[in-house]
Image (cartoon, rainbow, N blue to C red):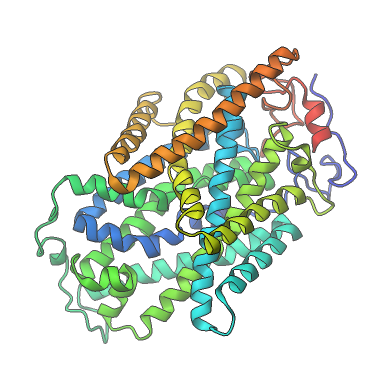
Length: 517
């Protein structure tokens, strides 16, 4: 029989009305509109606005195929993750599923690598935001702006999960409206029907009139893949956030089913508009940025200032979500005793305060490295986390191969989202990701990222294996049945962890997990 939910002094009793609590002890404070916008905005990173110009310069119009290939890969990975998350929403998401399906070492390793990736992203985005803000208010030094934005967003995350959701709702909303307006206005200009437009309205001719659709050959498509793949990181955030909502299963299902049109409109749609408004080899694409170049071609006044506002919004959104994601992964690791137990403590507002402060502390440290040793220490951090996105996607694929059988055997009614053509598309996605990693080794700019990321991953995996070995020596179970590593199924409408009927997804020592929380 599954143990009863353990009320805590700080988190309250999840069984009591008026005191909503997520299945792993966090406050269920995210509303449907928050999750909807997190799901929509999660695929729109700052990299789309600031990094697309280099991709266009490297591949020409064929960059559309690069975006389509990576987009297809992300759609398949999200479908796999959605299958597992809809069956078992939890704050640890793919790390908890890897723990269950592949072993403690896998959950430990990918959880810490993912946390490492996001704390480095905090430094990158804080610096990028500081550059824009310093341009507007030069009297405040860049380091002070970085500190200010980090402090403000840390405070919002510490206040409550609802504060994070509200910030992200508006940040993501601005991004979505901006890109939607860009696509509509751009298409009107492409066909020469936008009043007052300075663009020639050449239709689709720019896709082929400068060296053809493949001006740099078919190989440039793969080069473009390397340049755009990391701008898609963040799609999986909704599966972590869903655990802090009233209906996590419904939220995950909606996010998974809508990922195709989100990528089609926001990535392929907006890049298509850029390529039809401006010739791919126009110098302004790299100099000013692809979106600014497109807006300038229309004759929109203050295009650069408008885009700076949008990019700053994307940066703040990424910072906000990065801090949330890193802290929830640290919380999950602490709850499974793969991190200090203090990470799993929840304050009276229902947030993991220690996990948040620890994550932001390392983010501040990385910002300091960026100002002190940008070309050595910080560059090492960037490169050593560069391929983590691909590692995460690869682990999600391998985990889903095992989890499908576990769910079918133990809780078939929870399989409300299914991966298409299983297992063939799962294996095809694995091959695709491995191919990208191998191809990066042949690329001068990608080789360091793969090698250093592999080095860091090897160190983390070695630590995980040593921990498992020590558990065996101490008489503990090293695999999926270890304390808090497996997943329980909740019978509430949204599903969840820790309060439901006994099943094969129930942790052997769940009581210890509750004590940690």
